[in-house]
Amino acid sequence: MFSPDDTIVAIATPAGRGSLGVVRISGSDAQGIAARILIRDLPLEPRHATFARVRAYASEAQRPVDEVIATWFPAPHSYTGEHVVELSTHGSPVVLQQVLKSAIDAGARLARPGEFTLRAFVNGKKDLIQAEAVADLIDAVTPLQARVAFDQLEGTLTTKIAAMDAGLLELIAALEASIDFPDEGYHFIQPDAIACGITSVIDELDRLLEASTRGRVIRDGATVVIAGRPNVGKSSLFNALLGHDRAIVTETAGTTRDLVTETCDIEGVRVTLVDTAGVRETSDRVEIEGVWRGARARDVADLVVVVLDAAEAMTSDDERLLTENSNRQNVLVANKSDQPSVWHRDDAVLVSATSGDGLETLRRRIVTALGAGEPQRDSAAISNVRHATLLERARTHLAQARDAAAHDGISEEFVLADLHAARISLGEVVGTHTSEDVLAHIFERFCIGK
Ligand SMILES: Nc1nc2c(ncn2[C@@H]2O[C@H](COP(=O)(O)OP(=O)(O)O)[C@@H](O)[C@H]2O)c(=O)[nH]1
Ligand SMILES: [Mg+2]
Image (tube, rainbow, N blue to C red; front, top):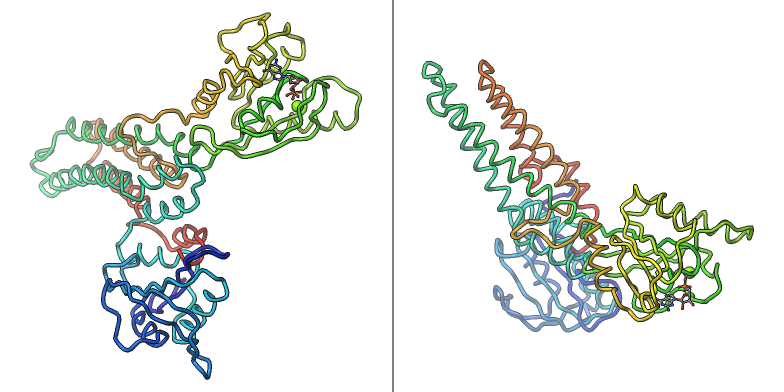
């Protein structure tokens, strides 16, 4: 899919104007290309930041286009594991394009999306989890997302998987020895010991999978819909959670008629917050449409925040909304706590959208209900559906292997087949067993220059 022998080049910094921009060149001819486009008598020294000028290579005049700092990272001590030259230019899109063109004219090929990181993977600088973590880290919009991605980049998950794989390899070795010397029966390992060894790997997988809901909510964010009858303070609560006045608030019932959507950071989780029209019987056509849209939004929400007015008796509209949302993931809010309450429910968070009382508790309740609460100590978060699916598959094979091992008369070959299959699934997570299609799919979502 990619030609691995080309020397590639791309602008590594985002589109737009800045004080600096970076052009990255990687491949066997990186130095040669740098020598052709830099106006400089001496070759670059390894790992030294060197001042130089870049020329327009193909033009007649070969006139200088910018002053740059050039750094040469000799293979294999570079991001990609190949020779890499990085040019820090002035951050003008025009200058960056000229430097890029000059490198292409001097023999480089424009890199495809993710090609630098793909090369890092192919050259063993990063496993697949870490390569994917690079994309996640770049895409992160909350500090928590960045932390989870960075942990994976550091290899927390990789280490866990390597430990499980080593455990399985040991069991496989013992079982294979038993097969090679059939007269000895289970001489090298007892069935109990096999089952026990498999169980400890299954337990470890379960811990990882348990933490995966949290990881996925952190990585992908969640949609939270605010519902309630008119005038209970939905829009006020929406604004309070956002921290600015986005939705219109008035004392007139039926003010909000369309969905109002904003993203915000709730305890590190990227939440798409949706304010809806109040649920009530109405003959106003616009309001009917609004109520219908609100119902649709609740259907697709990860969580519904049902707002009730603590200062007023509950109505049949409230009751209906409570029943309707009881099967959904929900958090109940008793709003207007600054006024005397006329009812009380243990399961509702007492909040005042106008004074801000109770908002902290509400934020925590939302995050907990989304399954993204405080992490277990020392847990590596699985944030990626691909990882979770493969780990589930490994678990299924291990459960089968354990069953087979527990049955007298089932041959070791069956146990072995499942243990091997489990190792393959684990290997796919890290990237030791991964098809080209999967790789292409993963690297597609990178931007050019990464
Ligand atoms: N005292 C008090 N009034 C509130 C509170 N939250 C909202 N309100 C008032 O209730 C009315 C309706 O608020 P709004 O947010 O538009 O409700 P919505 O129709 O559910 O979106 C407005 O007059 C708000 O100022 C609160 O916590 N305390
Ligand atoms: Mg409103």
